[in-house]
Amino acid sequence: MASRDKVNLALDAEMVERARQQLGEPADGLDDAAVVERALNAYLLRRLIDSTQAGSDLTAEEAERVAYEELRASRRERRDAA
Image 1 (cartoon, rainbow, N blue to C red):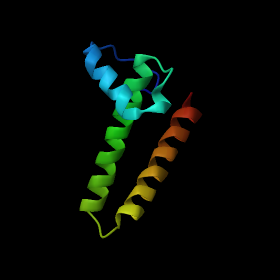
Image 2: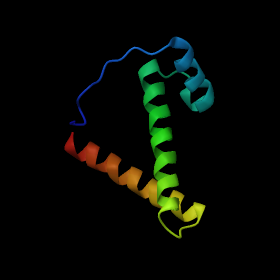
Image 3: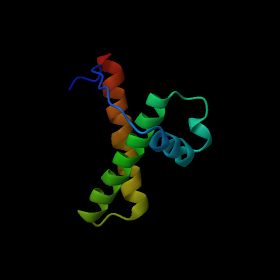
Image 4: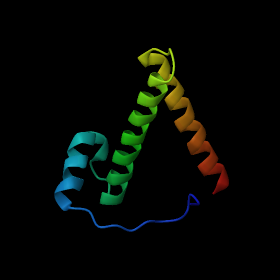
């Protein structure tokens, strides 16, 4: 899927509100789509960290550093492709 493609789905309003609360202050003022995107990104980042740790001898801090480096690289790729 190209980075510009959009996906429409219906979510329970309570679920979106829970995601907004979990994200805290940074989610204030964001529309529902942005809140869901941030929550999904946080979940995927956590999964990446977990899988990186499970498959290597990295410490939690090292795994987190690698994950953030990959996240930044992915964002640069999306930005450059736009």
